[in-house]
Length: 324
Image (cartoon, rainbow, N blue to C red; front, side, top):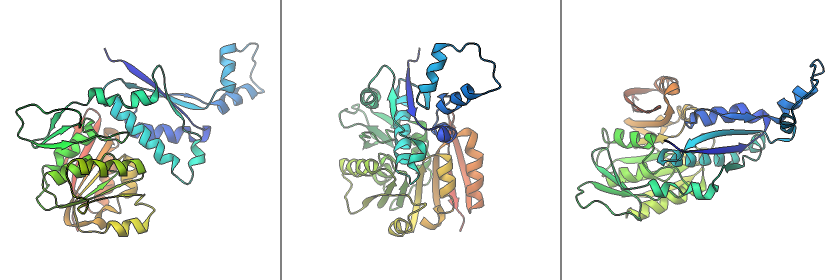
């Protein structure tokens, strides 16, 4: 029987709908919301005939506006929790951050920091695809192993390789990754995708994330895998709004990874081609199945040809080729 962790995020009434939509795209399946303003409107309704309102219900007039949801207390849940934390960090870094309120996050019956580190108890060495074996630094490998070892310590960044979105990316990359490829990893998290590509023969990689901690973690993980700093670079910023960053990244890439969420992939769709060589490949993931067609249709409009799509337990990832 699965145990569940209750997660609560404090926000503001105008942001409730948007926050729930963003959490849905991160794989959260259902919510309980409390809305202080809506309850106050209920109390102020002059046409209502209220002889009695329960005392517990009256407490809603003083509650924080919030979104509550549940994550399984297992490897997938711990990885998803990391994804939610990254989402909140992104929202806090936006110019309109005040719109979302404090975005204070709490977990019921467990300390947030304790559960945020729970992935360590689940994170054991495991194979991915046909070529890689992923392990944290504190674990040892099975004696019989002829795969390429990718050592990853994600800290609080998304990307242990256990989440379906990451696995799908790594599996798809084996279809197209070639020796000496040049890699761009957008929304790099722990850096697992670009580091995996380097270990399988790519010549260089650039990793980008909007969260400082992800950039630091990706660089640290590259070092743990003995990747030279002159061939692995990481930058913090938003390619959608930062022209200078796009110029720094440059062009001529053979393969782009973008394991993010549907709305951001759509926002980036017109930029991917500018980074790629003619005929270059794009792997997108982090897409809930319900939005896969929406994302893929947008990419096809922008000049990409769909090569293959893979799905796993509610998530979709796709390999596309730049036609220009």
